[in-house]
Amino acid sequence: MAIPAGDLTVLPVELIEYILTFIDGKSVAKCREICIFFRTLIDDSAASEYSVELAKHGLKAHHSAGGSADSLQVLRKYASGWADPASMTETHIDMLHGGLWELFGNVFAQTGPDGGLHLFQLPSPSLSIPESKWNIPMDIPFRDFGMDPFQDVLILIESPTQGRRRFSSRFPVPNRTFNFHIRTISTGQKHPLAKNPKVSVKLDIISRDAVSTFAIQISGDYFGVFFNDAQGDGGFLVIWNWKTGEKEMHVSDDEMTSFAFLTDRHILISDWEGMDMCITIVDFKTTSSEELALIDVNERCHLALPDVRARAVASIRCDPSPAWPNDDKSTPFYDDHDQLIYTISMWSADMHHYNFIVPRATILPHLDSVGSMDNFIPWEDWGETGARVLDSSLHAPPSMVWSCTTFGSKMVSFETAGEFIYCFDFNQMRVKQEMARGAPEVKPNVKFAFPQEEMAVCTSDTVLTNGEHPVFTYGVKTSLPFRVRAIPISLGHGRYSVMCSQNNIIIVDSSQDATHYRVLSF
Image (tube, rainbow, N blue to C red; front, side, top):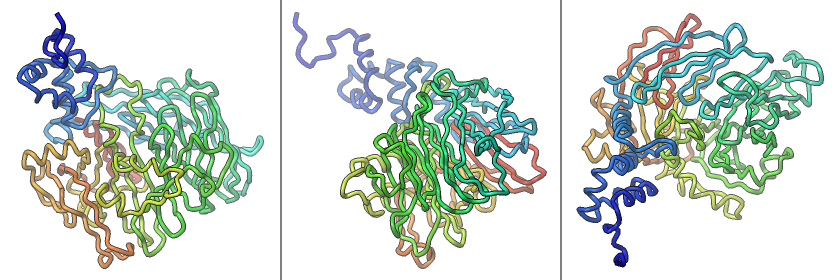
């Protein structure tokens, strides 16, 4: 007997459930509204219900994770416990004062007096991830490092040299060689997937201190390093494929201050285009691997930031990279990549701070402008409705050192008096849920006032007038909705900063006599 065209209900239930596993949660939710048959089938299927629940929370399932009843229970526990003081546990990490540290995902690493790396896997009660510790002794002197625990990748920046002479900061040395060693986080040995375990680049930096800071980012098969010249003589950005060892791009610019990965071929660079402060999108796959001035790169476009009266400094950051979680099997689900947030931190000449929060979904539509004649996008054409600005006078600014304040769609900061930790969430699906349940509303232009341990939402515009905020030439308006919760915290005397990972909030006391980091886990 022929099956009636379009009638899926005559198919075996097991086959329909299997078909539903290939579509996203939003589409499964729409199928649920078709008829009683599909509603009953989906409600009775743990895999389908899991898919719908993921979409409701703005999450994606890891390809290795199943959709069993246990997975659904873990998801609901995780979603309800985020930033909830009642579900948090606290642990401490000894502060080793080795001078270098890194936080990526659920792993915190720091150098110790022995010159080695000391790593700590942060726990997560909701995902049943235990804490663990391990140490990696080092066989080379290194200046800085970056890591991606999800790919077991560790990038070590060897202290720079010229010829056989180790660099000394007392004398200017041109044409310096920087070596990058590609290791594993688990053992510190050469990474088995790296064809060339060491890559190098030579830079002409003619200042007394070779490079004051490095910014290392790893995303999928690529890693990039931004070199910031201590004397303000400009910045250099180099990107490699860490698996093949091939250099993909090498650009320099006097105004370049930071970068972040956007896709598997595009990066974002904070710089100036003439008199306009911008976020520049660059296609690094089509750019020459020979050194170029950024202005000579053809495949780029500029997203203008609000006009400012005087020079200001901006830096851009995204944690984790858009390639996350790669093959990490400890992460059953993660924020939809379109909901990842980029934080653009702007510091004015008088050190007033503004934080612009921009979801990846706001930036992606402008990829079509890369390399086109119409490659300058004014702020009002992209930022007003697709971003949110936070003023540090109302919400404490992040530290310029302890800078890992975001993960996925989430961000943390201290309330200005230091009595609360504000936990922001810019995932629009979760914001809509809070709005639907009638969550209290907070106003962005004043200090937040809402029940301490209840989630609130902000849907009204942030308006910065040029009278109250003279750094801006014109008023600035942004309207991206968000949700926020305040966690009461007792700090005591110290100099505190706050950071976050997927399942943790890390409180840092940068006082000289500080002994440990506080880790709140959920």
